Amino acid sequence: MLVTSAPPPPHVLHVTQPVDGGVARVVADLVRGQLAAGMRVSVACPATGDLPRLLAATDCDVLAWQSARSPAKGLLGEGRRLAHLLAAVRPDVVHAHSAKAGLITRLVVRGRVPTVFQPHAWSFEAVRGAGARAALFWERLGAHWASRVICVSRAEQRAGQSLGIKAEWRLVPNGVDLERFRPADTGSTPYGDGPLVVCVGRLCRQKGQDLLVEAWRDVVRALPKARLVLVGDGPDGERLRAAAPGSVTFAGAVDDPAPWYRAADLVVMPSRWEGMALAPLEAMACGSPVLVTDVAGARESLPPHFAAACVVPPGEPAALGRALLRLLRDPEGLRVRGRDGYRHVHAHHDVRRAAAAVAEVYGELLGPGDTASAVPGPATTADREPITT
Image 1 (cartoon, rainbow, N blue to C red):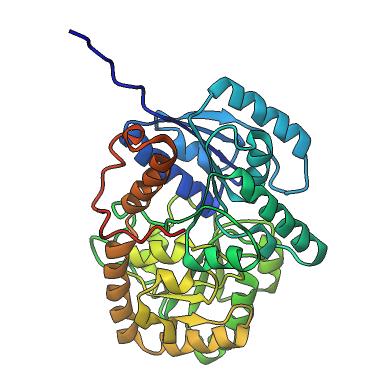
Image 2 (cartoon, one colour):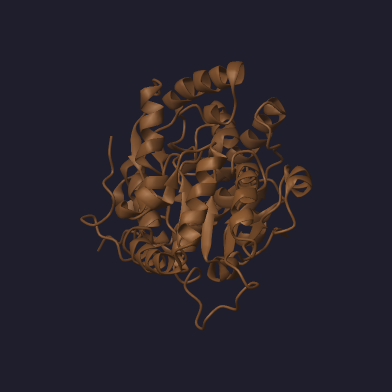
């Protein structure tokens, strides 16, 4: 009798720079889901930052890959170091995250291994002038060396398509860990006498905290007891602290933002650009209402009826201030939106749904039998977001 052994599980290599913020949380969630599904997983990333810490308790092989955040810095040396890692790991599929890792990975691999690229917001949206033109040129070229490009929102995909990026597109909306991000077991302790607004994110131009601080001056004039807390750290921290009025608190970087989401009367994400921000999803999972700017993924991450009151134009502090005042003056409306947002995230943005959809993309490249159990979770092919081309 001929006995055949089962093929080994596929080996996935994630390559990422940055290692902080939303990208780090997305990668960590994917890694945990893929390990649970029986895949072998390695991650190449800088040794500092949040991601190595998030992966420390897993069976993932974390490979130190020295890489600067700046897209124009150290490309040749970083490429050589990644080539050595690829030769040692010999993965079945490479999954590159964000602009810098996407650039170097595709240059090094050039299609010799099935390659998935996930931009997490387009590089050309982060710069202006010649830098934006160069980034767009690269993304058009680099798409030829990606077996699949995963976008986290339809708006992100449409932006790429409209500017001439030709790719095998797949849509996988972001998800959050609903066990970790959930409402408080008991009522949260009030933060002062007035309403509390919280913004969670890296203190940088993309996240738009400078616009929020400018808008906040109008809010606190009308609601003197209102308080704003900025949770996170980053390159704009010193400048923001110098500009902020006394009603703004800087909480710094935290390991777990969930207590801040639960304490908030309203969570704000004033970004200038995104793919699909995690913070609004995490806040809604904790039962908190949100106010977001109308960047890629924002409307798609919210219940449809939120758009009129909870979405404002990006880059307009006056509009942001007016929306903040309107929402904060309606506490009962905020409670209703908190409940509706919670139901929406549970129905559409469970992290297990996202992990299963990514496993499905790998299955297209490796064969469905090679992606183990496709990650345990509640989603079925019928109720997941459609995968589009």
